[in-house]
Image (cartoon, rainbow, N blue to C red; front, top):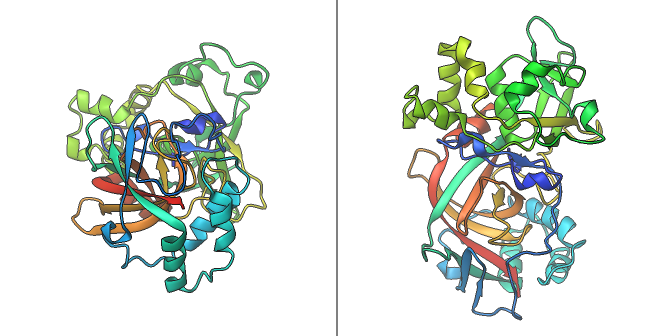
Length: 384
């Protein structure tokens, strides 16, 4: 989350893009912000291109490239920049996987030559079918997340009156334990003075917390980029589920769009709904020299690439790895088969065959992310 884009294992210093199961557990995606260590990973290598791997939650079976549906049809030039970003981080990491050699070979490949890119992956990597260890099932849940973009101000105005907060000054030395819930924070006054931006819609602000990052378009034309700065360490509870339990919405309406529509019909109950989730996310302003066109940093520590980055469970597979994904687009049977990079994580992203697909920034990406809850299959690519 970010990566959740949206929260999450983004909690190691976390962005968090986080990640979001936008349907029913929509608010469970928070985006990642920092680069967690790969030390302690349940993933184990046993030599060059073995026939299988295993972990506590996933098993991996060596397959041929012909077993990847849509592999030959994917435009790999679109995935290449995301892979180079993974290499930027993987070169610096100690790992049982031979990432450095694979990344060194990437320097000999033209990013405009799709045939050369395909030959590079087929020559340097072995694909492994991923299955859930507990069930043996090769299918799992694929959700979506995005980076919110909304209008706002760095000062409170009649239009922009909903604050996004940085970590309270009083907490920078020592965070209280237990920390106050969202409802307690909003009524206690401890947040006063830590406002870093103001927006118009309280539900949109809550979704930015879910994603863990976002962009604010200021009235002077500048773009303020916000990243994950911390949390109150309270457990996450889905306000989508809160609405479902009270029969305020149907399961079909348990999406970002459905929740926003409910809020417009019930403005006097919005705070009650938001307080159903005791968790609260704090932001920080990102450096002004960061290009506004770049995606938020995921857990790998590199900018996410729209439709080529995913969040995964670190207990299942290594961060930064290429993954071939086969699923469908939101609310449709239209095939989505792409090479993506495991560049993010999320607390809601749990399981061997489990991914959160990063759609990009803005409203159109949010529309897709908010409706995505598809079955899918995954193939992990590891260096030979």
